[in-house]
Length: 272
Image (cartoon, rainbow, N blue to C red; front, side, top):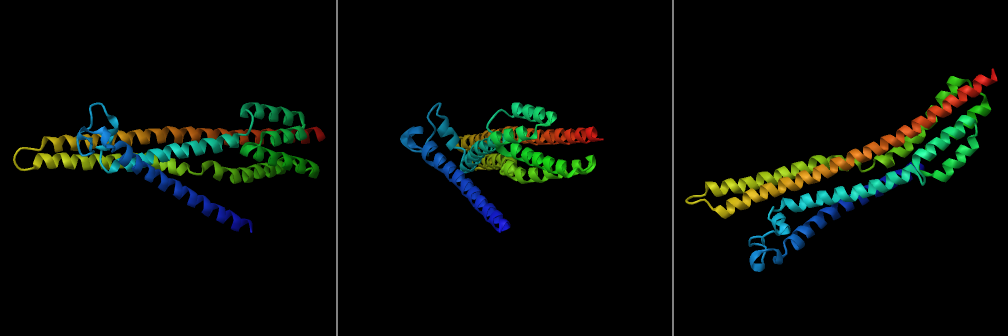
């Protein structure tokens, strides 16, 4: 039953992710077509004319049909960045994580496991949940009187299991951000290539080269390049930021686990 619920939840999550991606691309097309392509941004009041001087929306519109895809990618980076920030912030808990860890280490070192468990219940979040599982296991092995190595192995196993349950939630959608790092650059490169094809087509035309077509082709190439690089740069920054935060959370769990194991070893040493 639990596996069925987990699979259904994963299926629903994948469907929601797909809907978000589709909405971002559709929104990118809407922005490109109706906002950037508004006739008021161009000479003559139609988007087939030249952009008004200094009107950047019209300039980006002239980047061609690859622009809405790039805008969709940019919107995906923004949306999934906000989503990851909310999830990772929730995983850290309600209070300050550093102060929480200091309190846990102090309570465990003093042997006040009940106080540490209460602190975990107040903090909540993925880190507190994993540490709480280790603390409960600590109390169990203490009652059973296991030797130091067996207890250490048991507590570490409990921490690993608790962490493995929390990590998928933290790492979800990180692959999308990492994919957008490459996809933004590649989509921008595709727009650059199509723009240059138009530019060289103007040069290869018979008679006098069409200077307007040549300028439009080069403009399309440069606009797509700039948009693609901007999207990839933002995706790289957000991906590295969230990866660093996840590593910090994982390190906090491992640090607490080591403190719990060392405390138990000290407890066993005093019993001899």
